[in-house]
Length: 342
Image (cartoon, rainbow, N blue to C red):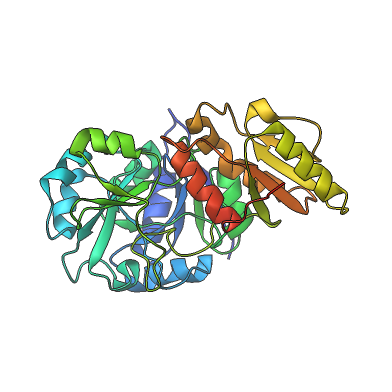
């Protein structure tokens, strides 16, 4: 299969580009497309044969549910059996945007391999002109996880998608680099109070300002099928092993010395303030005090490590508040929880 990357430019007539991809989706194919968070790999959410291809192309575990993307708020009532008032308030506040709401589903509409038979469905309305145009022209929901091989860092550029999936999918819609840089926040609206299953572009503080207290980070990793993407499996990992390290210049330099004394080449991912020439490679992700910068550049930095000969990657821990919670969630997954202790 030849993968065609289709550039979608602002201010240009892109009707033919969209029509190609819409036709592909309607015929059961896959299309990678940009959202405000990361690039998604989309298939018709109502077509089990099409959505099965997502799992095959990504190498994704079959018990890992898929988020369903919709083009309008009104579509929620088509697929959700119940819509709590708190969900309506969150939709009004943050949609379109990086927030996925989990509802009890109306049976028989969304493919069972999308929801892994749990009876719930995660819905979100992305805040990206390309994604919204694609969804509205299609007139149907798209199941769409991140457009990468399972376990690898999520793609924030079309070139990242091509690196992982070239020859595996028909089309990549290239809408430029994404903005948020980490996946959507996932909140379970079927529990009381609602429970955040994955931190992301909408922070706990923002959510609680709208609907009051929610449960957060209180659940354990689930032994059965996870309720949301990113809960159960190691994710976001480059080729070399990742170790977390505290944001302390002395500790980082001691760790680099200890590793290089063993003949290992070291890459460091961290904030601008800690950049130095001590490691073989340093990938700066922005100001430490601005976790939104750290999030926007995280996956690009992880992928850049794969272009080096690094044997070990030290990833500097982020602040824990606001968007920092989402960054730390992804770093912990990338490192599989490993911390480098000096």
